[in-house]
Structures are given as C-alpha cells and as structure tokens.
Length: 212
Ligand code: MD3
Ligand code: FE
Image (cartoon, rainbow, N blue to C red; front, side, top):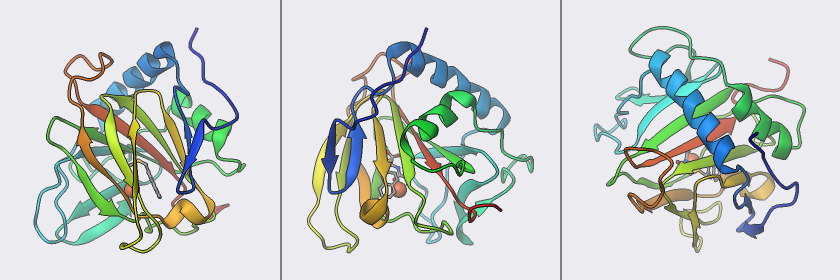
C-alpha cells in the first residue's frame, strides 16, 4: 500500500509551501511507473529556447496541454510536437497530490514532466503562460536531490535555496505564484529510485481559465 502525507506543510520558503517526504517510497515507485507509461506515448523532447540554445532538461507532458518551446517561442500545445497526438491523460496517482494540496475544486489541465540528467539545470525564471495566476502550481520531485532556488517577483530580489528530495511536494500559490525560481544543480546518484539516476520533476498547472 502506498501512502501520501500530511495536510500541513513541513515549512515555508519565500511563500513556497514544502512538504518533505509527502510520498512514501511505494507511492514514488507507482508514480515513476505511471511516468514511464506517459513517456512511451509522448516521448521526452529536448526543447529549444526561442534564441536557439537547447535546454539541458528533457520534457514531456500529460493532460490537455503540454508546455513546449522552439524557435517560435514558449507556449502550451494540445498535441505532442513530434507525434502530433494528444498528450496522455494525467494519471490518478498524480492528480491525487493536486487534490490533497491545491485547495481548489478546479483540476489541473497540464502535468509538465521534466527530466534532469547529471549536468542538467534550469535557469531562474517565472511561470506566467497560464491564464489565471489564482491557481497554484504543484511540484513533485522524484529521484536524485536537487538544489532549488527561489526569489521574489522581481528578478533582482534576494533568493533562498533548499534541497528538494524524492517524494517532496511543493505548492506555489498566492504571492509566491510569480516568484522567480530555478534548479542550480542535481546531486547525481543521490537517490536509488531511478535505476539510471537523474531527477524527475512534475509540475501540475491550470493553463485554461476555470470552467473551460
Ligand atoms: C515557483 N521546474 O517546470 S519545480 C518548471 O524542479 C520548473 O523542474 C523546476 O520551474 C523543477 O517551470 C522547479 C518548483 C516550482 C514549479 C513551479 C513554480 C516552483 C515554482 C511556479 C511558480 C513559482
Ligand atoms: Fe518554473
């Protein structure tokens, strides 16, 4: 039996609520299997930034919308850019986490799946391609630990860092929803969850307005 935890966050970092070990090991394994199924139908992509630099993170998505980037810019799309098929549905194992922490009856319509190998990182950015910033973003970490950095809503605001580990859940809502954030480095091989190492991060988002 897998289990998920605690209604009260472990701590708050610049408005981000963080639950340590929200998912136990069985729940992490179940979710990893569900992500393998997603990636079979919607293979991981190497996204290209609009300015022509390939991203170091590999990405795919589930749900109505997937986040994509290429020379034409950042956007959400309803089909996988290589297969032309709709994205797979968001599995119940993942939806359960949104229901437990997001404090809204509106379901997410995007689950972005990020894969970090040894040298991958994600520069400081805001997530603001969604219609309604009243909805939170929920992040789930699986596999190797990562150094997560978060600041304020201005790029120059001071930042704080924390290690995100396998099974941790993070909620970005309210003021923190437009905070700059990024991943500085992965502690490759720091977890035994993924046999080949690396880190998976899931972000659950509401892209369309409520009721659409
Ligand atoms: C703070 N992902 O996919 S998750 C992203 O670990 C992204 O892969 C990182 O940033 C990762 O956009 C960080 C934590 C997170 C996610 C969304 C946020 C933090 C956030 C949205 C607003 C503010
Ligand atoms: Fe982000």
